[in-house]
Length: 238
Image (cartoon, rainbow, N blue to C red; front, side):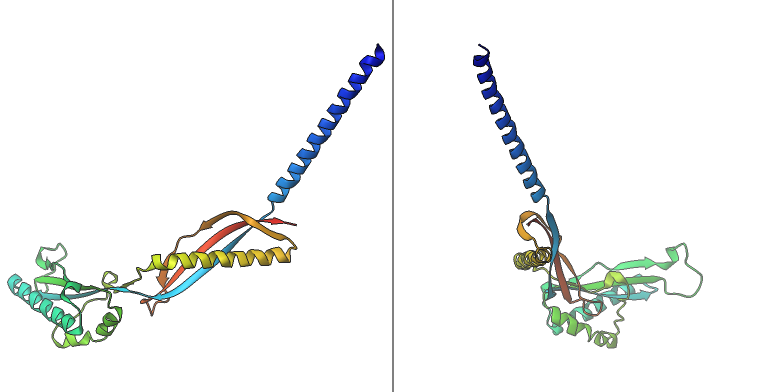
């Protein structure tokens, strides 16, 4: 009787032992795989382009002063016409030229107005050009002295009157630049893997940075630098 009971117990014990051994093997193998998957490298890839601006916004401001309000308004209108004539003769179309409402200040109404002999009213007006003729804007800016000869004193020293150059063709560049940034990141990862005697695996995660558009330098704002950085994390294996 004891032998009959012993044999099943031995068989059951053997199966339990094999089962535990197999589970231990599977667990250890899984741990090794997890550790292998934990080996990663994070790299960055850069893509840059230099492009020319394709839109220009050019404000042309001037100021006038007079003791008579009607006379001041007439002078502003006359000089608006002079500026517009200069622009049309330079090659800009009427739908590229915009005239802002004039701003008039009564100096005697100001709290800080003094008793010195000054013209009572001061007025300002701005003629703006919004165009894709960037080179024409640059050439015309060099001839602003012609307006001075006609009595129009340009007062564009303030930052708000700075000529702005824009690049609006970013969407056309995005696919190629993202591809280049990702390729550059992979080249860096391959070099690291070779140096560490590892094998580069699949991508674990990737993220694309924001595209930035900046002036190439302060002297050439019409030339832009477009830049994007891609961050990619790869698996490594021995």
